[in-house]
Image (cartoon, rainbow, N blue to C red; front, side, top):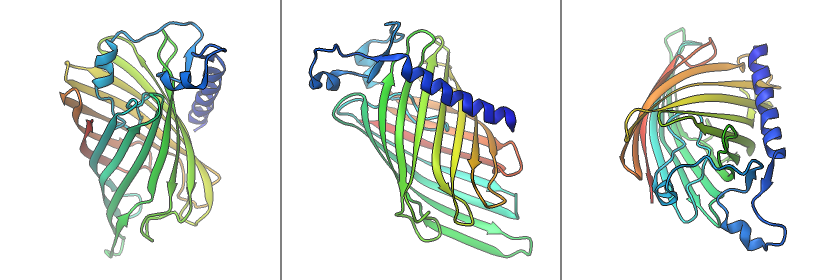
Length: 300
């Protein structure tokens, strides 16, 4: 537990150091309009640009937040719209048996004003069935709280310095009575990635979000992830990933750290349409036993 906590703290220190060592692309004598011409808000002081792709091809190629837990470190681009959807089945035997279905996992991403600005809207439904030790069953079905966010592209990769993005996000109390937190829950998500070579890439995310435990008390939930991507062919990709949740200030006894490992495949039918499948397992008692799902994303 101490090692995991130190890893989270170290990741936040990495974020702070990165922001302090970045500088604006704009010259001091340029106007405000120049900010809306930029792809990212900042550039690394080295001045290096790690992108080798043709700019037009890069803009057309879809980069998705799904299917892994680690969201992408880039926006969809000004004037572009991207729709991501999916389904997940999970099972947890921590207290009795609980089967859960999550769908349609909608995430709408809209590039507005500039390449570095993205509007994010998400909505999901949950259908779960829990079986107690006495054999009784309890069903919960309904809409979850709506997700709203703004993605701010911070930097492009420059050598060992990562491509990065900050997502300012929140859920708002629009869900059904049994699933809503009944309050707005804000959070921050810092994502970063490195293209290592034509085969391997590395990505991670560090985030903190307000949350509510089973007893109705507010707490902060930190999350950390590390994902390795593999380009198997021009269209077929794969990933393996570790991610974890660390609650801070929760009162409910069953709100503790959760650790997961998962992996999956993506197949890009066209440069702007991608299909995915994934599965994963929980690594400790309080985590879900396993989950599996699939989905797609399309960019307009």
